[in-house]
Figure 1 (spheres, rainbow, N blue to C red):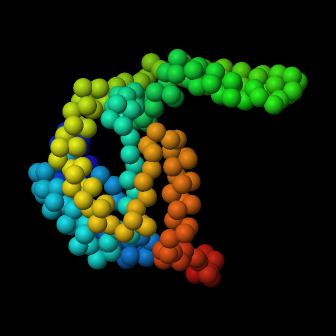
Figure 2 (tube, one colour):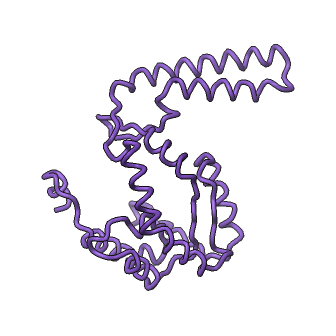
Length: 227
């Protein structure tokens, strides 16, 4: 049903999205393994207001333990999103530092300067040669995908700025109140300008020290023939 709606150009109604989400959140699988939920509350108020969406989460049988708040200045966020491009065949989203030759070259120069200190000439030459080969391969890949990349309407700078403004006007204050009420031990705040890999490691390190119940991973005790 959802596929036929999308193919015909319709959007999925909010009521249906919420229904599917609640079914999943109340499933035995989620009760066992837990869940991660994002983009709730949404900017769309068609089915429920921001407060109603937050109350929905608060009243779940299995309430969220941890809130992860990723902060990013408006300018940086707008520049990052407006720099995204989508591959017209695969649908994959590329950030500016993956497709813009100028940005890739600048990153390369900065990395090169940072690695110069404390290395011998021979070692430096070997690394330079390896980096040069890797850079050439990367630029060849960029050249291949560049003519397939398109900018989605939602990634136009003007549209991104409008969405950020709307988010701050309708959602941000309510979410800040929720975070203020939440146990600070279980509130993880992150700098959104850091690389995703670094943010992931920070979250994993913090989670290690929280007294959270771990799920027991299901293990087959029989082989296919025995079963």
